[in-house]
Length: 330
Image 1 (cartoon, rainbow, N blue to C red):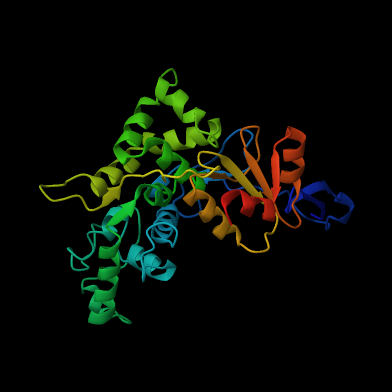
Image 2 (cartoon, one colour):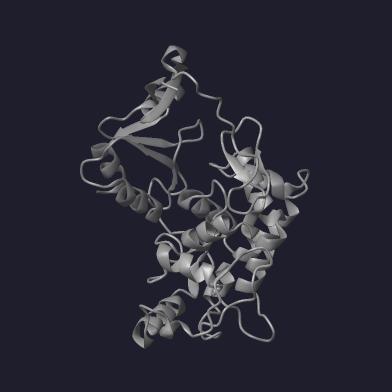
């Protein structure tokens, strides 16, 4: 079909209408697949949401690979040498199936995991260093890169888990509120009961709405996810935990933005968006992605769009870049 679109909000294109008279003759209505093309499990779509997703979770190879790619990415564990191609190769050859397997790879000397009951897989018996394109040096570099990330800060760990809707900012909000992995897990398990104080506290975190809270709790409801958390962070068979999760330490700051919620919109002249965000967080602020009545400051740059408009409608504090830099001390 031919559609007419318009710019909505800051940059998002919105479909205005369909132009049926431009539809080619002989076409048939599109039928969305009912099963996942990768694992053949059912596809579902939540009411009032656009996304359709496979219900098979980490048992779906495509989802498992994407979860591993996210887990190893720069803003998560940042494992050098474990990029998309290597993860896909390691998965297909049974070296890595879950994040746990990354941290047991060296101890297994690159030996494969048990075969998947429903997948046609390659059988690889030689150690990684004997693979084509690999050698002792490249194998050692990968193992050393994995070793370097066995200690990770709580907010990076939360982000690495790949919970739907939980990006870097939300991961930091959760870490700032709960401080330790164990306290977060305990509170999430208590929050399964929506009558508890734990559920109310989760919803009370500025920036976390009901839909996001449901996605977080659904993550903890899934037995596979809890098993991965246990194997990564608890002693197994008398051995030390695979990972050390560093508790979140709130920045000690007398800054006027400590504890405040700020939103950046538009293009800044002297700072990139990531630099501005990092500076604000280092001074104790929470950086949100959307404007609400709980927002304390909205910093606007060039070509600011709907966020500035909404901030004015709500009567929020709006600062330009110069005013923002003066507020935080340059």
